[in-house]
Image (cartoon, rainbow, N blue to C red; front, side):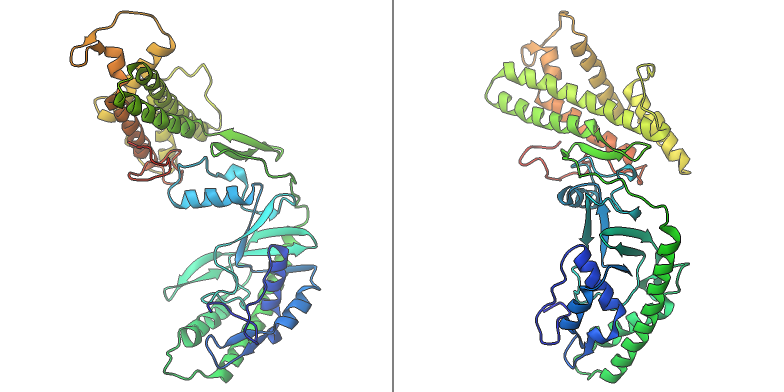
Length: 429
């Protein structure tokens, strides 16, 4: 068993959302719900007292093991957090405009409590009222406030806050972990000392919870939420809000066009393998157009991030120039020096040729073209054959990696890492 359990052995029912927060508050507030026992981990919970007291709660602060999120469906939040942790680029992701992490009063119609560690799991200290964020429950309303930051003391992380000095509480927590949780099996623990350690911990808890209560009372007046039901999003959609706080949806066309290019490339390969030049040509054109559209979409996105305005038809810059200019401004704004994509380089020249060919398709004229003597087909067909489409997609990925590796505060809009599978069995050059 890897959880703190009830005195008689079974696991505790923590519940979800507000029910979990009630349980966590009682575990931090009430010393008498914790009992010392001779078996590891030397602490157990009076489940009857816990449930009786939790049922009576209506207004309280808690330093929860979970974090409040809002505005999106639970699965959408989870998928986007996981994608961001893995490097991003498999969906449209999140951004500050999504307002997904609750800061203030939570959206009553679309909120969820995420646990990054299971409540009551060994290695956590659920009897300690400490953390960098505090959640406040007021009836059915939930608030979340930033209360401090993580610092490192003697190689261990602990919260530091201007609102409460966590030093004594964190020292007691670290002492339990060192002397009891991680104790040597050959050494009999001092249970009287553990009981005294808990007494001192709950004395500190009373102070930290009082500080959290006072902080909430100070900052919460006037706090309001925009309550709406979470929208249905495709993987290409990104939630944002207007100046009035109303939800809006942005489409990550860069990702959409990139994945379209990959699927069109798969069709090109399949048709070449079967000798079907008609469909190979058709899908090759679509692949190249998708690559060109992806470059422009990403360039336009960077311009928006740079200027907070979307470029219009009056912006006559070619996509690669827009990309370089906006990226350079964003890098310089953070005190760095941008290394641009330059003419004469493989990445730049390949993607610039994509632009030229794409324009010839979009503004089509039935002009004569040379014959490729190695294949006896038109040079236009050669320009979108399997080898060329593979190279277009590869140079696109390398270009985005080149730019966004210099913008580490931004998540790349497409997958830039090699050997990443997210398109099933399709080749990702």
